[in-house]
Amino acid sequence: MSTTTSPARRARRSARTTLVAVTASVASVALLGACGSSGKGYGSSNPTTTAGSAAAAPAAATGGSAVTINNFAFSPTPLKVKSGTKVTVTNKDSTTHTWTADSGDAVTWTSPDLSPGSSYSFTFSKAGTYSYHCKIHPSMTGTVVVS
Ligand SMILES: [Cu+2]
Image 1: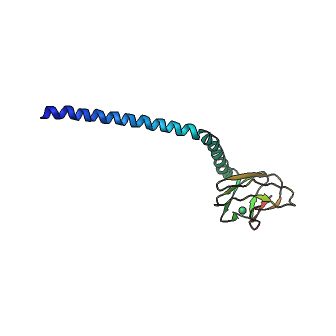
Image 2: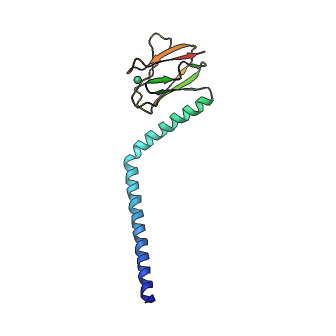
Image 3: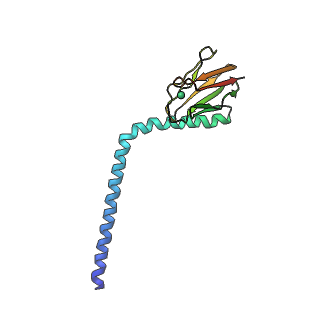
């Protein structure tokens, strides 16, 4: 009895091992396929994301500054920075916004449409008070004071 059971168990074991190996190779082929088709998107979006967050985080420590858009509002405002400060506005809202200088200021800038999660940076090199708004929602306003 024990002699018949033993080879049967061995057979089952090796069958299982083969199955695992096949499953693993199918999985890796599927993975490769997924990588191949989405590789471009990954390659182009990854460095942008990394650069954006890398620029925002150390910038705060080195005198850069950050403004966040949330719930149809810029924050903090007014933002006080020193001349030469790079200000990064990040849209953490669920809607698209822009960060656009009011006309008439000595320095003007505008971001493209910032979809949720996107950010835009502008370096203020001249002292002054700069008011801005969102082109899509004119009631969204804010101020950057550069000294
Ligand atoms: Cu807006």
